Length: 219
Image 1 (spheres, rainbow, N blue to C red):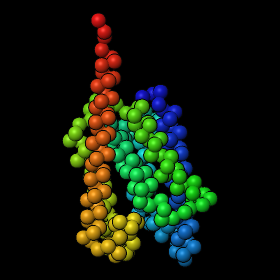
Image 2: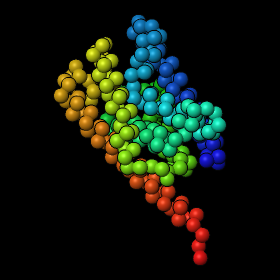
Image 3: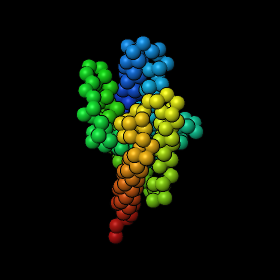
Image 4: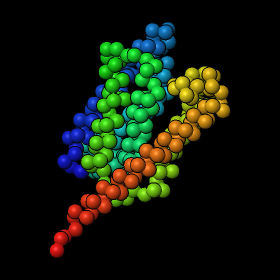
């Protein structure tokens, strides 16, 4: 929707700023431990928050550019893709605020980066989704397809952890909990993903019906 392009452009710029700032601090943290910059990048790329905020920033950049800028932009403009991203960034905010916020207390620039990726980008992207994403094509069957991203991330974390012994989130820490409890936690989180996705599809279909009814001529 052209009238939402300024919002999309602002959101994309803010999102990339937060991501770059977070990367810089990740590198600094690892260098303080005697590691190199690549270790900081590897740490950075282990977090679902970071990967999902990248998708958000790309989707908003695509919306700001418009559909005439190639297949990648058109992919990120697909309503199903944008709604899947909305599902994921909503979960980022929910899990962080309910389970993780109390585990650390960033300050200064790191606090700013943390606020951008956890507190500002989720509602900003959901606002964009509500205002700008066409939802007539959303289907209930999309909900299961969208779970391929969090499921793929879970496999990625398990493989990374098996290789280097590091897990990004306490509820996925196989060393502390064992594979059984981690799998149980993953199933609970997956149910949360599905619940949020169902809510988004329900809201989207309701909004689409209202828009269609408003567009019909009245006698």
